[in-house]
Image (cartoon, rainbow, N blue to C red; front, side, top):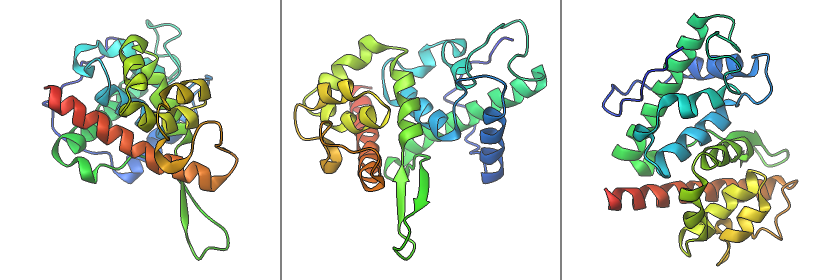
Length: 222
């Protein structure tokens, strides 16, 4: 299947809650290992937008199939049951990508990532964020262009902001590399206990700072 290119000038038609849930269920129901969750896809697409190189300069086939665990045989609809489902999923992903791009471009302060949210027992409804899957997806995108991301993790200003993402995404060595100063969220790589939901919440909320800082730097360079 030939994938359509991402068009930054396309209409902004964000997925509604039912479409987001349906997309998540579809991806998790595929008969493959490695398909992303909705959170992971959101982190993956976000990293493609805010990091190098610009997503519009990359062929869609270079990054899109990773969302559903890859294309075992590009000549077939696998891992989907039909080409129609594959095309439908592609459209939904590109729509979500465009909604992220428009949110960051037009109102970055109002941009919201998709994190898992859990209510903390015994706290009268206090909710804790868990960006583990989101950060894992984000790091998958950095693997597409490691030579472009390495200077960002080593940057004295951006490195500490990116450290929580690396830590949540399961790469403590990368997190430590970015910690030339205390990590955002007040949790350093050596001290972080990822089994503690309070720690995951602090790191998750700090992850948004990295995205906004990266986007601000991207805007300044355009």
